[in-house]
Each structure stands twice: as C-alpha cells, then as structure tokens.
Length: 261
Image 1 (cartoon, rainbow, N blue to C red):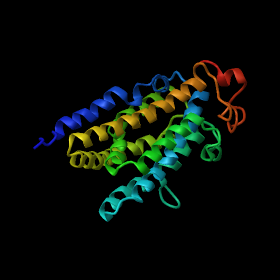
Image 2 (cartoon, rainbow, N blue to C red; image 1 turned 135 degrees about the horizontal axis):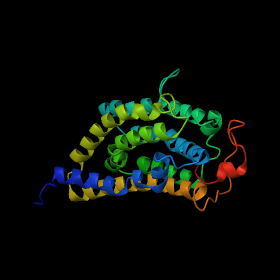
Image 3 (tube, rainbow, N blue to C red; image 1 turned 120 degrees about the horizontal axis):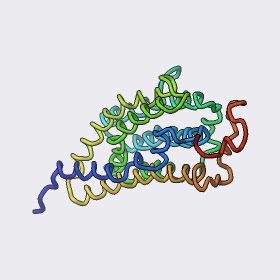
Image 4 (tube, rainbow, N blue to C red; image 1 turned 90 degrees about the vertical axis):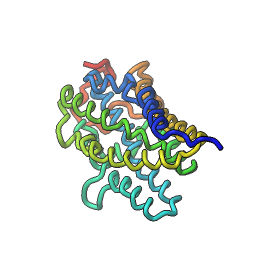
C-alpha cells in the first residue's frame, strides 16, 4: 500500500511556490512600493487591478454553484460578501473605487472596465474559468495565493503612504481591510487543501493550481509594465493615460507618459 503523503511537507511545498513566484517580486510592484511610478502608471494599475477585484466574487459564485455541502457554501459565501459588501455600504470593490477617486480617476470609468488591457482580461478570465471548471480541490488551491497577500498589503500601505500624496486611510482602506480578511480565508482554504490532497497525484494537482494562480497575477503585471513602463507601448483599446482623469491633474502628454519623477 502506498504511504499517505506528508501534510507538513506538502504545506512547505505550497509556501515555497509563493516564495519563488508571488508577484511581490515583480519589477512593477517594486517600482510602485518604492515610489518610482508616475501617477499615470499608478492609475493604470488601479484601472487594471479593478478588473481582477471585480471578478473575484464572480469566481467565488461560480465555485459555490458546484458545492453541494451547505456548510461549505456558508463558509465560502463570506468571500463574496467581503468583496461585494451590502446594499448600502462596504465591500472590497467599493473600497477599490475609493482608491480610484483618490488617484483622480472617474470611478464610473474604472467600474466600466473600458480601458483594461486585453492581457489583463485574458489572464483574469482564465482564472474564473479555471475555478469554474477544475476539480474543487484545485479550485480551492488556486486561492491560496492569499497566504502571501498580507505581507504585500502591509508593504504596499507603507510604501504608498511614504511616497504618494494621494495615500491616506480612505484611499488605502481596501488593503487595510484585507489584512483582516485574508488570514481567515487562508486558514480555511489551506486546511481544506491539506485535508483533501491525500494522494501524491492530488498534491501535485493542487500545487499546479497554485502555480497557475501565481502566473495569473504575474502576467497582469507583465502587461502593465509593457504598456506603461517599457517599452511603454499601449495596445489599441487600452487606457491612454488621459481618459477619465480629473481635469488639471495631467498637464500634458509628456508628463502623463514620461519617466517617474
């Protein structure tokens, strides 16, 4: 009889994926947290990251539609509530739009997803499809990038407060809230994966799912870097650096698309 895979070793394997591949190591994030981004680059990040944020509850709803266990649905439902919030208040999506306002973007434009890079759409939509179609173990495992999120949120809060005039408690409320929410999600998701990945084959599949998710996050930043940093080639249909920006905050095209100040 084959031996049961070791849970502790598998957990170390999952965490090693984040140590090697999580997008906190991407050059764009290093620029953002270090105050090296122009406001145009910051706004491009806000616009494109919104597409990811807005699809997270859709991803979770797709997952829940497959869950027959009411208890698991109740636990997972909180993720949707965290992002969508109530009718009148709260929710990560609305907090992200507060960030959009803080960087002088029209929040209605951001919510429309009109200027999102095609590569962002492809990556995020692939993630939603993955969760909808893959076995439930792999769907849950793909969410485990949240294991690495609190550190990046803490670094982001500190970096934005230090380097950018727009940063204040209201603008950064999304990240502060995720410092509380993400660990709760990780505690359940990690336990679920460790308990259900009870064969080597399942462990390999779960690890591949987490690797796929890190690729989704990394590829979004690759697209941003290419379009707005170097070679600064904005593809057709993507935000041009001017649309939906509060009048008077972008003095000319050179300032909008030039190097970081």
